Length: 104
Picture 1: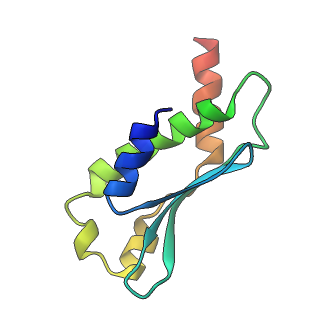
Picture 2: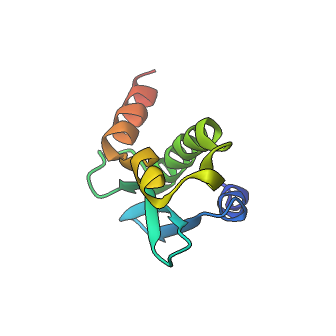
């Protein structure tokens, strides 16, 4: 994980929340003042040998995939559309990806 990634996500208009050794989240501030949760990943459920830094990097990679798939329409999305497009809790996906990486 690089701070450049976190700065880039912020410069794209998203908020990054890090609760060290607990969770990693990316939110989109809506014009109404609310924030829309794009993704969240809990660390406390991870298996031994997986660091919080691993979880953050995997979550950042998943965010970039989501962003690249939606970047042309993000500014045009309503709050409801953005909520529908969000990924929500990606903990299982991150755990699965990191477990596969450890096997390879």
